[in-house]
Length: 88
Image (cartoon, rainbow, N blue to C red):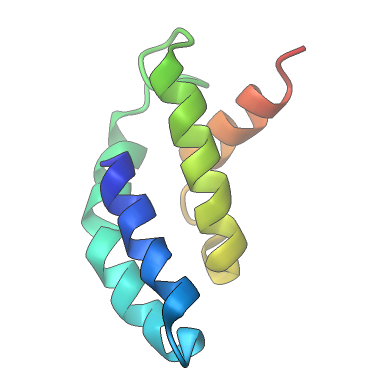
């Protein structure tokens, strides 16, 4: 799932018109993001911190940087990012 999200963002770097490609890139990952959002147990995916949480937080933070209009849509994933970023 993380590879799919990252894979959808990558081609935007090489596009002549990345803004025009945004809707198509989001459509590729929307279902996967919805699945993730619905499967998160607590501030982490499984209820305790794993390496997958760290990687997912990194990918989703990149996603939010590209898709600024999606901030607030995936609240559990945003909590995950905040949780990981607040680890000392």
